[in-house]
Length: 340
Image: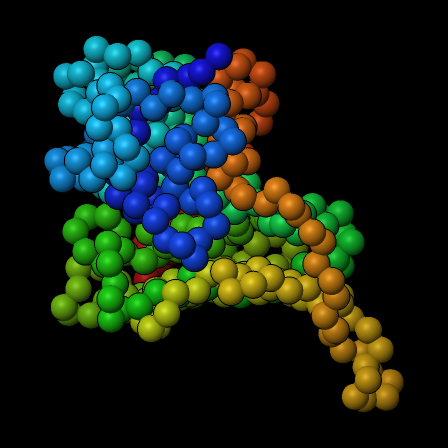
């Protein structure tokens, strides 16, 4: 059986990033729905974007010129869909989720962040309950086998006791993009949400936020740099930086335990273990060890596989569910409200 899908939002994460030859593929929602081994489970029946040129570009890029596809809101409302994928701008997430729920779609995959304000989040929770729907939010690292492996090893104690994490999602204020303008939120909400998500996946919510500093230039609508020091259960301390005015992009989690150091990064992953030092007699130092191999590590395929199980009525736990993303939103809100 194939499931009918509606895709709302045809920008980078919805479609165009698939053109990047340096990325792993699929790396967009269209890439999964139309070009992957999972496409046998889906039929893309409708697309929509507020910018008509994006619709035309999508039809051309994916060779839909001679295929029937609903592209207007009137046409979409007359179709039946099993899944709605929302890849529009952050500020329109709630509006599009509300639209999808009201036309009877019970399974919704949202891009992060789930909402940009608490009012919309409360409304979304109410609507999901009313329509008995299921929500996923695409914080993709929850679905990456390596990130899952690190979580399991930390929780089992195999990597010693967790002490400190340095979490950074660094972006450029020189060419800031959508995270720095309009109503979509600054780099803390738009990009830092990835770090907060993985911290939530590992540790839940912070017990206390000790320090926050957010710098907002006069020429920008939002912060360009956000720094926070947070404390979690068992005196695990996390230093978070989002934005940072760097002339590069970097996601990195530097996880330090009593016996290991784990670096998870878009620049590459490494694990170090304490061993007898080759430099100082009587001391121990960290030495790099081999990473486990995960041949099927594309998180997009893992995420959509989970959704397929739920569409078939066989689903279990939703990794990126509404409850987790409400916690993530509240952590981001707490950091923003504590600015010194």
